[in-house]
Image (cartoon, rainbow, N blue to C red; front, side, top):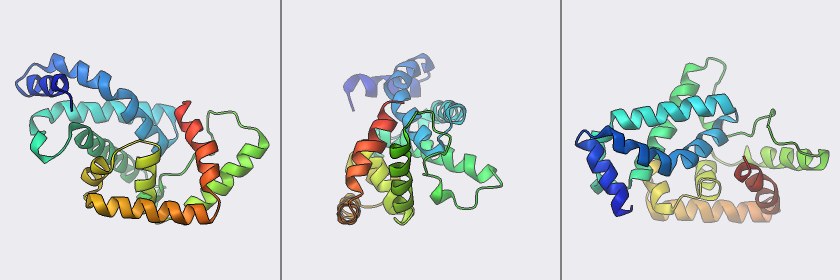
Length: 190
């Protein structure tokens, strides 16, 4: 965490909430992408992102830098915001499976790409939800193992092992090429 970031946070904690605008600017794109990937709906992602930052602002005094990085704290709020959203929805049966790519993606893909994406989606449903979440946080959200550890509550070494083993399984099934060539650019170009 940069000195200026910590300064903004401390100023907010002292009551100068105007400093939160700088924090917002630092994290808006990352948090929006994190939420969008898990909802695959632009308006929902926008609403949940706003909700996440509202919660962060309301609870800024509870953030303690000795307990972890600010980004991890913010990602936890985003994760809980997403979970709360899906808990309120009656037609969703398993919150852990709400990682899936939407069938109504905004990205125009040709037929071959759609077929490959379907193969990836089918394969990823076979991965344990907790492993899938670590893969997503590491590859798509570009989080460090330390941040993933803080968000999931798992040991950093355990996160590394889960990631490595899951990637090895993916490599064995030749899906890694599809993941890196199709899915990642799709998410990045949103």
